[in-house]
Image (cartoon, rainbow, N blue to C red):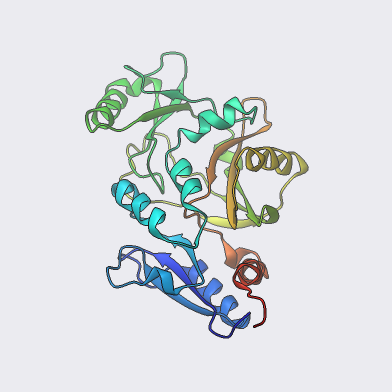
Length: 285
């Protein structure tokens, strides 16, 4: 690895220094002998060709600028995760592909004309979103509000997804399984975000995070989800919740800009840094 090896960690202008994950990863990269720089993905002065690798991190404004973001990803020569993966993963219709591949996922209905009559509670959200923005949990007695939510998304031209609210989430939360180079790294528990009667979430909300232990059943489902995705995956996060029968199902497969919860898993930042260092290694001259 040449001393000049340099890595960009892509963020957005609203978070120019990244978050705790970015700071931990930057320090771990420096410990590996790499240069690390946090750069906004839409910085007009950024020279992406000058980096040995660009790692997508806190690019959290992409949902409002998806076409622009994907065009940027196509232009970056050494990007991870790669542009093709980002294009597939930034629209939650990827859940259809996972379902067709036999991966257990939360049941999802797409672009309904009306709210479901057979689910006592359900979640309405757009297919392109992050941090639960524009998402809400509705009860059967809140049909007027739910219909207004559904209508507003459809009138904005957004693909709408509706899922049953799985009550076990209220006690179990979500379990996030983190992977580095497709190998399991660590797990975290995400506290429930969508409260009954709380209405629409219009700002990003990641919920409280604590360290967790992955069960063999969760690891098996996550492995099936990742097996359905081709390409080089530096990082991946599989968010699982208990399904109707208690078995784990995929809520989301985060391959674009997931929080990695590095601070909840000692040694995990170094693990990702080593994976990056392997990719930027060069033969000796």
